[in-house]
Every structure is written in structure tokens, then in C-alpha cells.
Length: 370
Ligand SMILES: [Zn+2]
Ligand SMILES: [Zn+2]
Image (cartoon, rainbow, N blue to C red):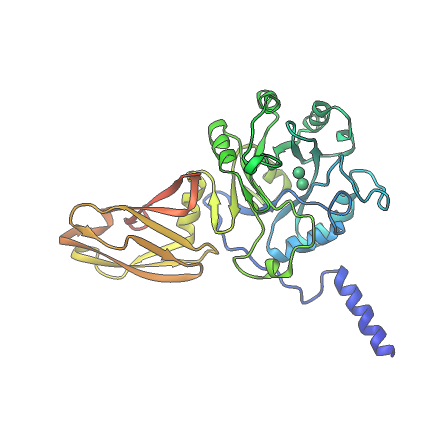
């Protein structure tokens, strides 16, 4: 009986603390020259708004899944558990910050300003104090965030719209013209908004992908490789809160959702180059064919689609390069080629997207010369 009680106590303790044998899945998306590629989720909820978990669980999940930084963004205005949980708007951050520092997770104080359309929902990040955002007028609430030099994100712009297609109202024009939309979710949970991606490209608004998770994240998603929440990649000089902030205001973000990364070629190209090692297996000079080994050390399954072969040349139309695998491909020409390294054969990387209908273009076999 005593033993059973001991086991039960141990089980109870291990549920709420980081167990000694806990495992963290490392996400393999490489750093790029000059910047670390930080894996971040800036949108999630706890029991302090309409979520169903205690704040420290969000930290534990983030640690297990391999994230570097998170923000708990409980709704200011929508708190369905308030009968049972009465606290100010800083409380979820205060309850998670100790667990975050113990786990090495950067915790950014945030809140979600929550209005019906046309205003919509906005996350304010890097707050000092969430309480001043609790004010009836929408513009006053945003102003309270701006007064704290917050990074303001227009969340899920297609939310509650027909077919989830985003609508840009006058309100957004007013905010944008004031310089108060610093970022936009092009992915929220399982919804991707191509139109929002187009707007961000046109208006130079940094893009984000966020989980907006409300319930416990299934253990499978935390543990399995390739199975992950929507997240934002931040290209930061250092792994610090200040560095993340600097990178976000400078627009150095990308959206990671499913097997796709959405963003600018200045970030996606180096990610591809750092993910994939290319090696020639046969002589590069004076041959009619060349064999190339490509090794993908990232978590992404790359798919390369040929754009057009120059006259006389042939090779694969589609190259599938699974995560953590190597493949061998070959190219041929009717004549011997003086230098294969100088031959341009262009491929679109279909899972690295610069715009809704535009993929990153790379050059093979111009080795490492993308
Ligand atoms: Zn929302
Ligand atoms: Zn939310």
C-alpha cells in the first residue's frame, strides 16, 4: 500500500514537472549565414482566457517540441473561465516565466486584443504590462500596446469570413497607415491565407505562422519528427528576447507550416543551401553525363521541379529529396560538356514559397552555386 502511494505521488509530480528522462525533439531547419533560425510560436492560450491548460504546460510543450521562444497570448476581453480564475492580464506570463527560464525557453509577454470584425484580433508582443490593453475603445487598446513599443500582429485575417478569405477593411488601412500593423499571420493553426501572404509581400509586412493552440497539444505532435505545429522562423543574431524583437521589426521572419516554408528568397535560399549538401560523383569536365549526390539533413521533404532543360540536355523532371536522406541523380548531354559546374539547369523548390504561386528557383548542377 505504501509503495502504491509512493508510485502515485511520483506520477503526480512527474506530470507537473519536467521529468528527468523527458525528451526534446530537435527541429532540423538550419541556421543561415549571420543568423540563427529560431523556432517560435507567438500565439497560444491558457485557462486565463479560453484555453484549457495551465500556463507552465505551454512551456513544457514548447520544450518537448524543440521550440526556442513562445508567447502566451491570452485574450484580454474573452475569459470564459473568469468565474473560477480571477487574475489580472499578466498572470499567465507570471506563472510560466519560471518554468521557461528553467527550460531555456524564451518567454515573451503578449496578449490578444479581441474584437469582432471589421477590427478583428491582434496580438501585442514584448509587452511590459498587459493590463492597460483592457480598455473599451479598440484604438485605445492598440495605442496602449504601441505605447509599450509592442510588436502588433493582425491575427487570422480570414477568421469568420466566407471561405476564410481575408477582408481588408478601412480599419486595417487606418492601422497600417499609422504603422501599427507590424506583422500578419499568414497561417493560423491549420488555416493558410494565401491572400494575406500576397498583402504582406506587397506592403512589406513581416509574416508569421502561429498555432493559436487552446487545448493540450497531442503527445504525437510533440514527439514525432515532421509532425509539428505551425510556427514562425525568426532569423535572429542571438538567441535572446531582444534579438528576436530586433529581427521581427526588421522583417526577418518566415512561416513554417506542414512541409512548406513561406518567406523571402534571402532567407529561403540559404535555408535550402544549408539543408542540402551537393557532391559530384563523376568528373565535372569533358563528360556527356554527370552523377550528383544530394544529402538533405533537414526535416523538410524537398521537391524540385525542372523548369526547362537547355537544348541537348536531359535529366529528371521531378527530384524528390526526403528529409534526412541522400539521393543520386544524373544529367546527360548529347555532347561532352566542358564544365558541368557552369551548366544552368533550373529547378523550382515546390515546398519553399516566395508568394502563393511562386517557388524558390535553384540551379543544378552548378554545385553550391544556387
Ligand atoms: Zn484570435
Ligand atoms: Zn488566439
